[in-house]
Structure formats: structure tokens, C-alpha cells
Image (tube, rainbow, N blue to C red):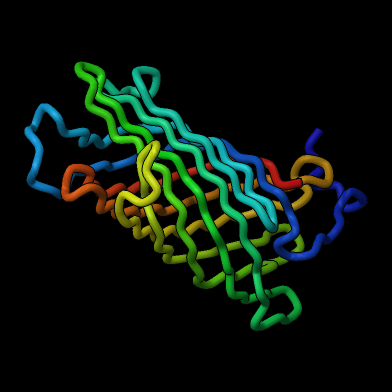
Length: 218
């Protein structure tokens, strides 16, 4: 039973201390930026993707799928990543924290054409930092936002280094506290932009996505 109107169930938790489990719809745009391959070997798409996320104060994990079941007709898509992070507060006031996130992210992305054996499969290791903010708007609502540029290496299976990856991502979560008993309802958005420059220009792809999520904070 929802307890949004039951004051006896309410309690304040430290800002940024919740773990958020969510699911969402992602609109992804994957576009080739090189000149070295024929059109029938390209993996471009603008399609819908399903993504699951687990975001905690020190660890983020995400898993995404795309295929015929999400409306993709020509390609299939798979992505999994994990991120270790630590927030160093630079300003702390009542109801607000501003911090500096330091993070390292590892990632596997796979895009495959359905009509031939063309495939993009790259792992990556990147590091980054940016800006973190958490605000308690009132007793009911809290807002968390973070934005980070990241840079590192992308490589294929069996290779140590194949090329570079630049990634900028930003996310925000609106939390409605004590919505499910003492747990919160989370409504989120994430922006993700990646630039792969790998193996000459064979795998020079850009990826841009907008993710909308709903979940529970506990």
C-alpha cells in the first residue's frame, strides 16, 4: 500500500544515500563517421532500446537490449557497463550537496547486422570527472544530478588497445520520498554521447541516446 499521505511512515535519509533500481526506454542513434566501408557493411540505426539500471552511491551497473522485440528490423544491440565512483563534497549545506565525482567505467557494446556477419563489438575502459549535485526540494521531493566527461581506450576481443573513446553522460533523478512505504519513487533521465575512433576509420561511430526511466529507491 502506498504511504505517500501517511506522515508516520516518513523519514529523512541522507542526500545521495539511496540505491535506485530502474527500467527504461532509450532512444539510441548510432551513426558511422568514417569513409572506409560500403553501405551494406554499416551499422547505423536510430531505434528503441530497453535498459535496466542499478545506481548506488559507489557503483552503477547497466544492461541494455535492442532487437526485433524493440522494433529494430536491421540490427541487434547489446550493452553492459559497470562504473565505480566516489563523490568528494566541495560544498555542503542543509538540504544540498555539491561534489566532484571521480569515476572509472568499463563497458561492452555490441551491434550486429541481421542480414550478414557485420559486427561492432568493443570493450572500453574510461575515467572521468565532472559535477554532482543533490538537493532536497522539500520533505517529499529530492533531486540528484550528475554530469561527467570521460576519456579512455576502446578495444576488440583479443586486443589490448584498438582506439579511443570519448564519452559524455549526464543523468538526473527526481525522487518522491516515502512513496512505497519507506522507499522512494524515482523518475529519471540520462543523456549519453560516445565517440569511438577505432582501427583506422572502420569502427568510427558516434552514439547518442536519451533514456527515460522509472524505478524504486531504497
